[in-house]
Length: 373
Image 1 (cartoon, rainbow, N blue to C red):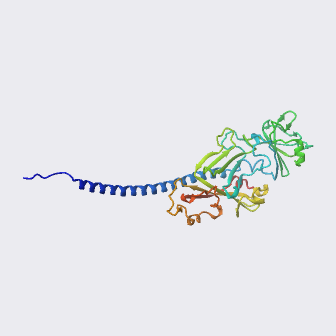
Image 2 (image 1 turned 180 degrees about the vertical axis):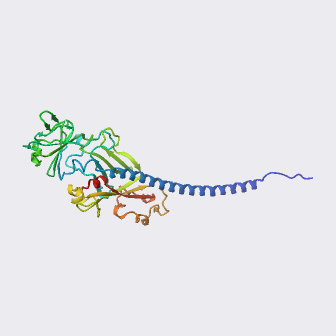
Image 3 (image 1 turned 135 degrees about the horizontal axis):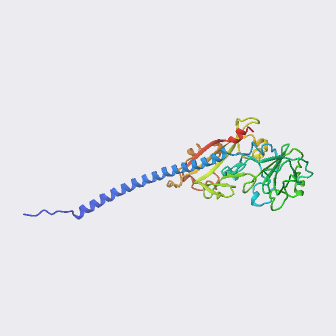
């Protein structure tokens, strides 16, 4: 009797390998498509999370802007006189000193805007106190003359003094306090970075104050006359950066969130003596590029739009066109923000091979509203 041979022949093995390879190709193709879809979905969610975190942090600081300012020593400043000798201790306080709760710096060439919230002092410190106030008891012969005051309580060398009268305000560095003589000196030099020379004051028509002018003394932040926290976009690295003037802070171009490519902001403006916003304006032009004190008081809110990008590059079509972000999608972006997709710095070649998320919000300036100014 002939025995039955068991096992596989070469042909059977080759057929099995072929079927296995075909199955593996199908499985890998399905896996690759699934993985690409997962990466697209995940990166889109990451862009949304990055934008939400960034907008939440900006909103928190902008909502608190003007804390301790409008209702206290800065409220009556229609015209301000200030000076900076160039040192770090008064950086940003020179001719650009403005007691505004919020400052929007319009981006050059339609690029990202910068938003700066200003406070009387660092709200994170427990050492904050309202300024000590007194009155001038004799007329100043010259703008550079020492201040003869009713009391020097709460005022000491190294502090700042804001003298105000009839809408004029002058910012000074206190260089010496004579308690018994009731005098406050504001001499120029290394101890008086905010104090210009007498000739400078006379040439620029700084005011000399008279009896009854208010003097407010307060400790200054590490740099400048007010605490500032700014948000700006690093377009090269696609990062939202935060900078502030804390004395011991590492927040100098601190990265808040990655993959943020653009930020646009506008002032919400109300009519004089009203709290209801009736127009939105860019921080440009003669009026809103550098608003006067009266116009600053009309700013009651800010609206902000952030454009966040996914980190996932999506392969273009064979003809080289990218369809991850289409013209129809761009048309859904808020028109008021005016994201300039022709700006090659913000939107370099191939930018449409990524997906984008737009987040926007309106932030009321509650300290301005509560101060009813």
